[in-house]
Length: 269
Image (cartoon, rainbow, N blue to C red):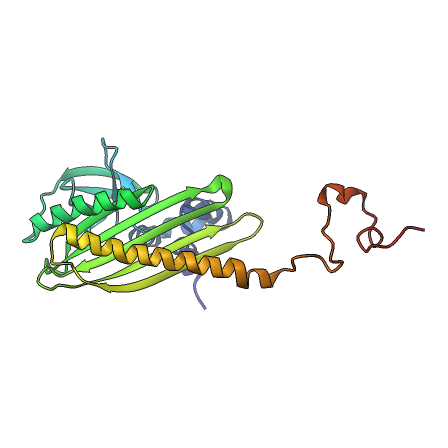
């Protein structure tokens, strides 16, 4: 049987996009003594979900991931060439320092950062990208997170993309993940992912980003078709178009209906 600590940690790690604070509030109410032991869960959530933070004294956002982790709670940002410390519970950054990009692929990383940021801004309303040396500098990780939260309308969503480029090969691998939560008068969550293999387009930064845009546009189109199929097919099968009386209920008059009489089409005696 799972321990209480691991159960509570799983709540944190499975928190829907944009709703970690709500989950933490519930934990405080239900199991306040477990909060002190949740730092590893907060760190895993932030790194897996590509949580974004603002650097001290800057309006720019940077993301947190395993790819730019320096250990001991510090992370690097290739674009600003800084490192920073993160409080994973509050999702706040502090202690920024200069951290020069040390990589044999430094020029390509800088070019990819610029091209990827520009493309992301064209396709997503709110996004943050990161490009980092990976696998002992033998490859390059391109990471994107885009989010749109609308809690006043009871929905939140997050898109995450991860690509691995090996400069010496004309190919890339990647994973696209989409997580959407809708919770008005119910609780519906869609979490889907797709692994992709793609060409690097010759290896230049612009070519790499064009190939990424192609696979992401294709995935978006696949999602759109799937939603249309669900709306016109599966979802309609879950609910009758009309009540068993084959007549629409006039909801504005619902207070005047006599149960079993007007609704059932009968007459009062």
